[in-house]
Image 1 (cartoon, rainbow, N blue to C red):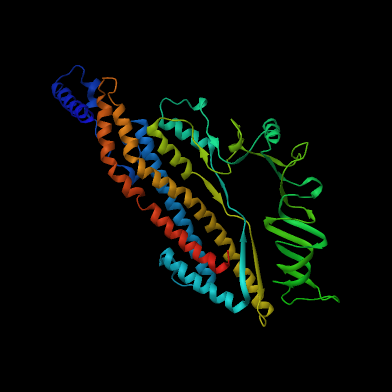
Image 2 (cartoon, rainbow, N blue to C red):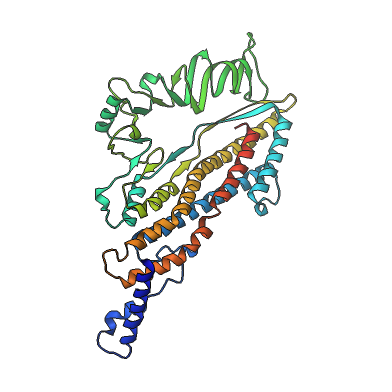
Amino acid sequence: MFTKHRNWSFLGLALMCGITLGATQGCDQIQEICDLSCPDEGIAQGNASISGIASVDAFFGSVIAVRDASARLQGNIKTEMVGLASVLGVEGAADLSVSDLSAQVSAALDAKISANVSGNITLKLAPPKCEASIEASVSAAAECDVNVEPGMISASCNGYCEVSADVAAMCQAEGTLKCEGQAPNFACEGDCTGSCQLEVAAGCEGSCSGTCDGACSVCAGGACETDADGFITNCAGQCMGSCSGECRLEAGGACEGRCEGSCEYTPGEFGCEANATAKCDAAAMVDIDCQGQCEADVTPPEVSAECKASVEARAKAEIECTPPSFELSYQFAAGVDADAQAEFKVMIREVAVRYSAMFAAITKADYVIKASVQLIADAGGAVTGAVNAIGADGSIDIRASIGVGCALTELNAVGSAIGGVEGELDGSISAVTNIGGMLGA
């Protein structure tokens, strides 16, 4: 059916333009139609306006968005790798591939750790915070589906999101509310991030700054000092025992003292404290109005079948993941002097900061890979769905017919644009994971 309509349309166009040659009346009105052709630039050049058909061009736009997201991720990972190489003294880093960089950085890092640390080093990372834009998902749906009115649709969050006081009350009644901020009376019964003051000796999941009843991984000033009871008084790292003083929970954890950082807790009878943020598990509720980003991915609005893949892919491509907080634990080897310890501490912290950034990047990479796989699988259906709609009511639209021809030709470029995304990002993920292994991440 499509072939018949398409041939008829192009023949009609040719006849129309031929009849008007030499005519003076009416030529201006149809000149635009006679000059129609496929654009000179396509997906490869970042142009999604191929067909003039909203759903088809929105699909091409999603392909470009996924391709660009992948390129940015790979570029960010390469930048952090080069930074690590510089810190570790690896030469010629800028000219190496990410895989080769990973191998050389890992070898250099292993040498540094072996020369300074007794036993293993451990890097504890908090889960990366990834947020999806509900607004971006709604915008993508409106761009693709001409029957969708932007003010009449909404996307749903598949995780926690910030909510108003009224909605928070509803969520609390359903048991889906959590609070983030200062704990009531500084007593955190949930996850404390930041400073935990331990007036009574207790276990510390983070970095102990004070007295440690046990072995301490790092001591302020280099050498560990002890009191009459044999307790280390200048601990500044992981305490393999009980800690008195400040416990820094950069990656979050239980605080058995006074949580002066941020606490994630379940509210009591009267809800979240005034200085805390109320967040609701939108996935467990119905029609929750989120006030900001979604701490997960989103379910896009209901759209036509030919728009589904492109809207879902665009939502995944625009998810943002921020580098997580972290804690480093290690014990200096005997004989490592104060200067060497100070140099190592500066070096290993920068390594951890750069690894944290790469960890956030590969977390987002998983979303981008899923988006690319989805687009490739649905490429034919997204375009042919729109093609089948052309002339379905018996009418023939010359402009749309030409656009369909352009779109079918441009389909060949989809594979070139994102066909390699999965393999390339998998390679970057492996490279980052390799370095994480050296850090005990």
